[in-house]
Length: 440
Ligand code: URA
Image 1 (spheres, rainbow, N blue to C red):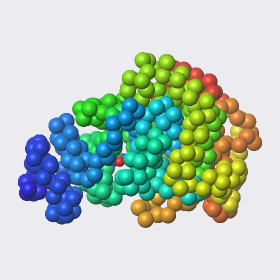
Image 2 (tube, rainbow, N blue to C red):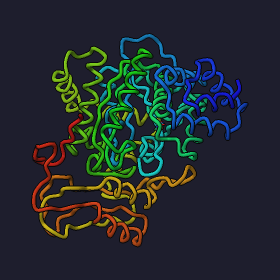
Image 3 (cartoon, rainbow, N blue to C red):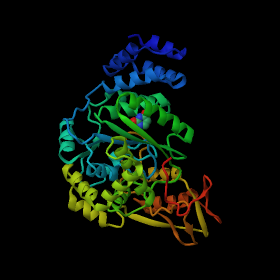
Image 4 (cartoon, helix red, strand yellow):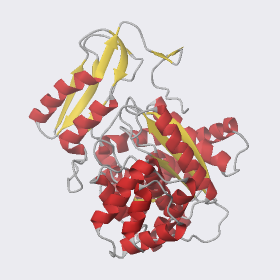
């Protein structure tokens, strides 16, 4: 494999042969290609793209660069969901136990947050004692036993993505649709799943800022995953305002538990139900979306997913008494300060990017891969878009480690909210209560 020839071919807009792509991935994982050549190839791909065949071959080569899970035959379909990430996006937490209660097996392998977007692993690690480091054998055994496991990639799964993603991160080559597609799908395909639900976000706090970009990414991922025999459906959902009413690792766990107790914000519950319903339809467990939604809603209301959540926590080492005590505390960060509304009217904007940046700067997110996360900080009681407010109403609450950080954040957070005399109109419709986020 001559990497220089690959770089020159891609630079000149030619396609790479399947053999070249496979040899390149193998050689890179074996440290036989220097990073500077891989960086050049990634940049050439960033500008020239990959066609469908190249993307498919790259995805397979990355998946096959390490262990691929193999589950025993079982009538319960293996499924997962992936979100491209956003602020307050905690859907995986209530969804995984709900899916297990709906008769699925869920080997949910998630990532950490980087920059302003949160990661499921960071949220889970705010639970006392909970471990996200499962071996392949533990993960398979737990999924077979209780139907669900939530952990990180094992060290031997998809090493090619670990290496390539780290290099993309520092070479400005992350926002490439074929590279994102291969990165996400190589990891999902290594889980041995038969159905996948993708939640592709668009908006000011999303990876893909416009709906059109999100649609292109969703179409690409859906086509390739289906070609691999994984029944895949993508939702396009908006990420201009935070999802739910809380953002920050522990605060999101708390809100997820509310959702599992059939309480909490409507937009979160709605998205959880739609994700579950889509997977019921995709796997043929339900004939249509209306029936599937009703089934998912009934199971959520039954309390079984809340009990499954405790089972999941216990299986992964959590201290359930400490967890229950922590849930009962109003706040776990030393300072919780209310931000009050300065004028009356309707909330027409709550900028998720600003909220995400504040949480990151409070210590709740990563500036780089070595950053240590403060899981107690964040923002909750976030007033949703469409809500009617009066002077003095609480717009949100800041959870901070120090008083100074809380005060600085309070000044910044005002800029996230826009209050107008009239409520916003959304695609010709008045938002009645502001907390129904319709999947598109
Ligand atoms: N998440 C991933 O896992 N990979 C990407 O390339 C982008 C987001």
